[in-house]
Image 1 (cartoon, rainbow, N blue to C red):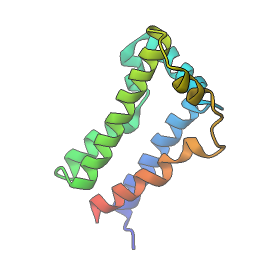
Image 2 (cartoon, rainbow, N blue to C red; image 1 turned 90 degrees about the vertical axis):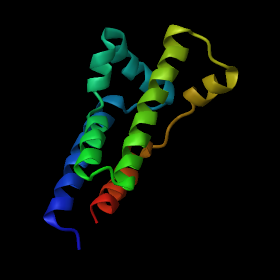
Image 3 (tube, helix red, strand yellow; image 1 turned 180 degrees about the vertical axis):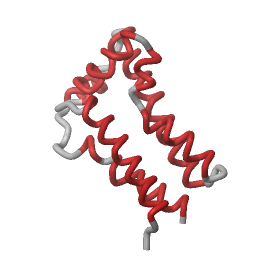
Image 4 (tube, rainbow, N blue to C red; image 1 turned 120 degrees about the vertical axis):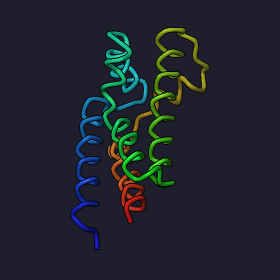
Length: 130
């Protein structure tokens, strides 16, 4: 049975993840990157602030005394942000992308693809606190 303590962490994470989905959601990865680039272009710190789940992951790792599952959450969220930044640089700043990457970025995303994080990360929170 999930106790209130665990449930509160999971609920907080879900709220933060839904916030991120709300401003990033787009029909293709290219449009999603475009939405992110608007914040990145204004200020890189603004772009980073727009990812509260990353800061949640840092806090959560410390709260769980660096539990392996909490560290996994932190590493995945960190790699996610770094990957987004590299794609933004490659597509919008350097303007150098391969044909294959261009095709991938223009491929339509599934209706529920942006919500995958809601199914991937909460189990890590549960495992870290169990």
